[in-house]
Image (cartoon, rainbow, N blue to C red; front, side, top):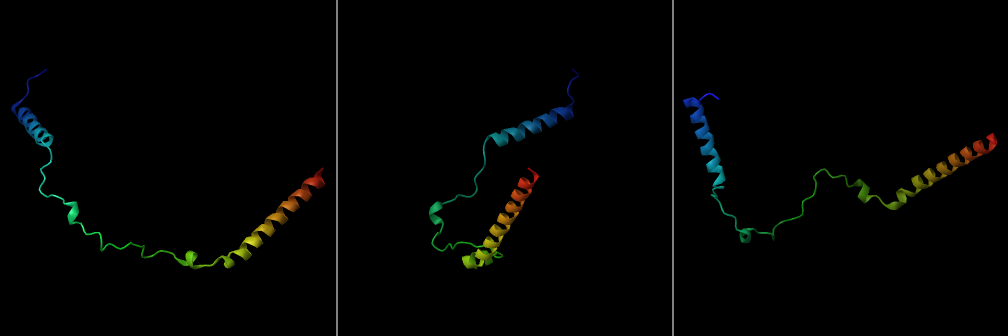
Length: 88
């Protein structure tokens, strides 16, 4: 292996200096005191553009759609049964 140049030695020294500074830990400039937090004035946050139309609708608006869907499903299943029995 060739010998290291002066420039390579200086770069290695700089890297070592950075690693030793990191290993010492973080220098804390600010402290946090949990007792200083005021939790009494906090209000629950809600979305500004929330779609509240579903929650305001009552159940009687869904019943006709539900009945129509069930009737159509029964008709379709009945037709499939008729076609199955007609093939046999």
